[in-house]
Each structure stands twice: as structure tokens, then as C-alpha cells.
Length: 211
Image 1 (cartoon, helix red, strand yellow):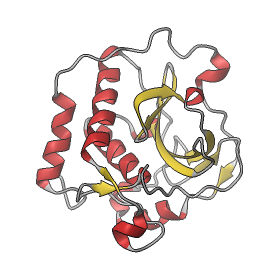
Image 2 (image 1 turned 45 degrees about the vertical axis):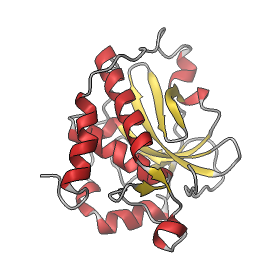
Image 3 (image 1 turned 135 degrees about the horizontal axis):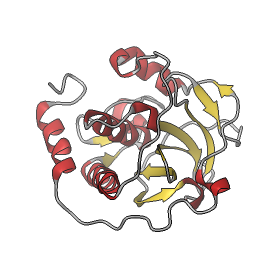
């Protein structure tokens, strides 16, 4: 059952993307230099207000039990799934700011009606991957500063080949250091409600009109 997070129709359409056959290039050569494979994690920090409010509305998606961190074995099949999910969600969901959508500056939610901003894309991609059996511990909601210095949200996938980024601004899935973004904070691998700093300590709010 898809539950009230996604309508049966929209959920079926989006999940169908996971089984669509296609050929995508697997990243050659792994993550490159080990020092660039993974984002440096710093101290514990405050979760974004949007995540806290989202969890109040969707407590089932924010179970806070501490678990053992897990990485993804980035096989060619796993890579094809990532590409399909990223491409499908980016093509299906239409960009719309929270102010236009909900009349508030910030609201994290599943884009059930087909509209959303950056964090809504992230939540849906994360949900789809978890539903297909991927471990939550390797799928981390992440706040960054984009190339314009503005707050933005992406999904970081922790793999044995490095930290890869699923982004609604880019169809290509890139290693974190190739995105050109400043990484601010993300969920801890051991608990989705514990957030950790990622080097750039300047506060960032993940809002977007066309992102």
C-alpha cells in the first residue's frame, strides 16, 4: 500500500520507473582520490526547520532509532536504478516554490500533486529508493549552497565508490566534489533525525523557486 504519502496513481507511475529498461553509463574509475571520495563530516548540528516540521506531519518517515551506518555497493545495476529514479523524478515533478505552492516560505513535503521545490524532489527520490529496498542509512537528505550561493537540497548516496549526488538541477549523478556546491549539513547515517555539519558552517535554507 502506498499510503497517504503518495496517491496510488502517482505512486504507481513513479515506482514503474524503477523497472523501466534502459542503458546508462556506469561511472568509470570509481571515486578517484580517496580524500575526495567522501564528504568530511564534522560536528552534530541542528536539523533544518523544514525537516522538523515534515516529521511532525509524517512521523512514520522519520523513525529515529539508531542503526548501524550502511553504504551501497555501487554495482552497474545499482547505478542504473539511481539514474532512472533521478531522471524520472526530475522529469515528472514540475518546479514550484513553497510560497507559490503553499503560501509559506518553507514547507518540506512529498510532491503528490506533481509540483515541488528542491527538498520535495529529494524526499520523493529517497522514498522511492527505500521502497525498492535500499538502506535508509545510505540515502541522506543534504543541504548545500549552489553555484549562486543559495540554499539548495540534494540527496547524497553513500557508496563504496564515494558520495554521489542526486539533484533536480542536474540529470547527471555526480560525485559530491564535482557538483561545485558548498556542502553545509546532512542527515547522520545512524539516525535520520541527527544532522551533521559538512565543513561550510554558514546557515543555508533549502528553498527554491525553479530548483
